[in-house]
Length: 441
Image 1 (cartoon, rainbow, N blue to C red):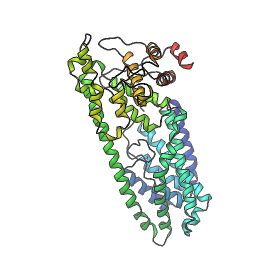
Image 2 (image 1 turned 90 degrees about the vertical axis):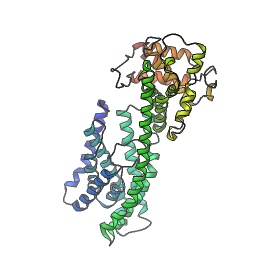
Image 3 (image 1 turned 180 degrees about the horizontal axis):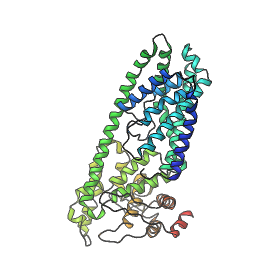
């Protein structure tokens, strides 16, 4: 996010202020500084050495996802001291996304608040004494409660940043975050509890550090998976660029369809992971044009029936091209069926109504909307309100009315600001007052 919305900036600053309030008691004489320093250095080193994904959404490299050390601090230290463990690793983390400084402050505040809350709950339930004794299996009770609070705090804050910075609808911002995070965080919590018990045992801190080895290996393996996924995404970008080069009249169209598809998905309340796959579907919907002769894609005049039949093969070409990209999932069906129509007159298979996959019905609306609001070799761009009126007119026969309504509502809230490619000037289509009134009805 290059431009931070004011409400998101206020949200981050409030979180940072809350974190500072939680950290303030650490300045007192009761803070065990040697333990805090060791855990902070250990956490920072783990974060710089590698990364794994926990919350179920993309986390920039080094932005704090190796939780056993933080949870061990919550089980061993007073709340303010435990919160302090997370701060250096988050503030000195590497990130290639802007604004880097604000992202680091946000991550430090988020982790400090989550660790402080976990330590408070753990101490209130007598967890500190249970770890020191140790009293097993009672030690699992306060540790389990602390893990739940840690996970819930992260999910709560994460949903808030989705709603304020990425403008995800409130009803969808927190959906699924806690449940997706709970499993991985619980595993990290068990490792943190083992560290805490060994730390308080006669074996001391060195034995506690050995617990991190298998955890670090598992995180490294998980990170390899995400590097492979990143490689797939680079492949997707290369395919889209190839389509843009081949069909110069629609340069940037794929990115805009992906953007509009994401807006519809969020309006429908889709989980963030499904919405991301739907964005891929929008981006790749025309990849099959690589199999269509360039002379047909760039032809200025009307197509002959034979030429039209050749172009209508592009959904099947595209489906074959992406068949081997496993993580695309439902996106493959959208690529194949995005030219189907609700009344069965579409192609390639003439599906009707609910037979058409949900993702394909979304991409069909996003594709038609961008086609109408973009200048092509055969047509001038239409205003947004005119394009939406045409979509509404064709709803039920060509397009799914639910998807059309979702796009109208999304544009009514956010307007239409198409993503800019390297070959395009910034384009912003104004949102007319009449369309705003139509969206509010």
